[in-house]
Image (cartoon, rainbow, N blue to C red; front, side, top):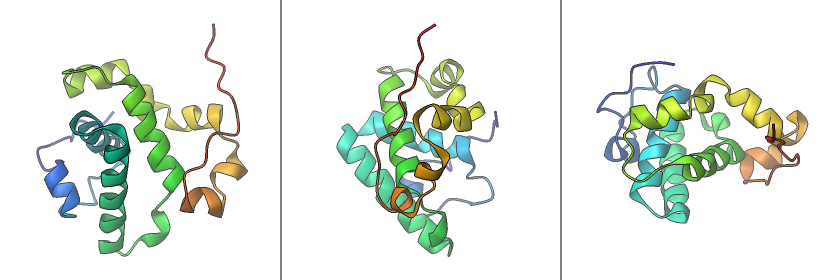
Length: 135
């Protein structure tokens, strides 16, 4: 995991699209998503994060990088796993797979073609696979 989570990554900076794209990697996305989920009710967190991400992507001229299903799905996972008043470092220690095995998580819930379809990029799609996490 990357240890570059800094105060630069805040809801305010994200909403103002004042984020350095060179450091806004997957872990930083998860961190900002975690901030939103802790700050707002889930539906509002998703709406605000999604809108902020679209603004940032547009500002960077990278509109083709937006992916609704990936965005929403990770916010839902974060919300499912977040504990009240838990610091980021504890959350990340408990949920390192959100960063270190994000492709594995996605493969448990989504087939490749379905996840990377134009439809999945444009709108959130429910998983087409059922994850089997039972040991």
